Image (cartoon, rainbow, N blue to C red; front, top):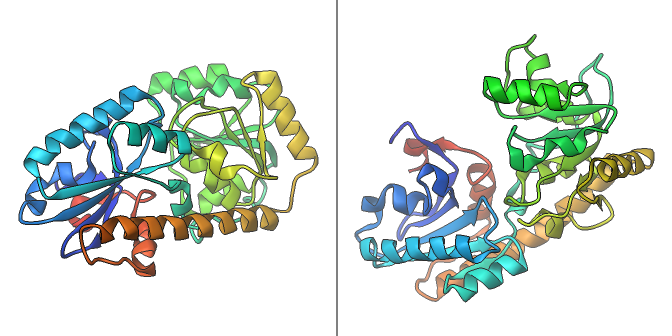
Length: 323
């Protein structure tokens, strides 16, 4: 267990206040409270959960409700708050009796980590970049008509890599090109520099969470082309630098071409989204403190928000470091 890496942090020690991403597919449905309940048995504890997948349907909410009910038998003094990324998600969670605060987790992206960066010397510009694992729900085939396409991704299995090269034979596979054919994770300035090659960032799934890459694009100065989707990215990125395209390859390619012909200044895109993030962070912290005030005298300040940004859902750390 101590080798496990997870996106979570402690916001207050006594009584404990935690922030964790809900990831039931890997056994982390209730974050730190479910992973190490013994740490929270001795008294009241407060747990804030973020959602990695849309909970705008009743099935997801019913599963979460049942998990919370089971946890109440293990940790009867624990209190939970779920951060909803959309109004529909907040309504559905509330309907299932789950304590909810509407606050989009995209505001927790680190603006110091993701910023406009010149492209690597000698590497060509591209029309669009798509940051996405090679999963069916990411709908990569919708990008097949984009003339110059750059892909950034988690390490795929051999079958997934072969299949994607067949689907998008003309795309640039940046993580493999950077290491002469073997996979290399690109992060930090190397990741931002690759995004600096692109005129547009792509979001092509129909449903997931808010999609972290969507905000990373804008922080790096890229406007975004997205398909309609549930999960929270459309609601948070809405504005002059977001173009919604129908989920067809032709419509996506036309939207990319349209934005590419009139690309906004990178600093303008970044300033717009930073302003929105600051507003959302303020609402989030105010809402969390209101929730805490109902059962404690805890008041979280700006330092807690800084921990949420630096050590929260964008950064997976060993459990020993989190605790």
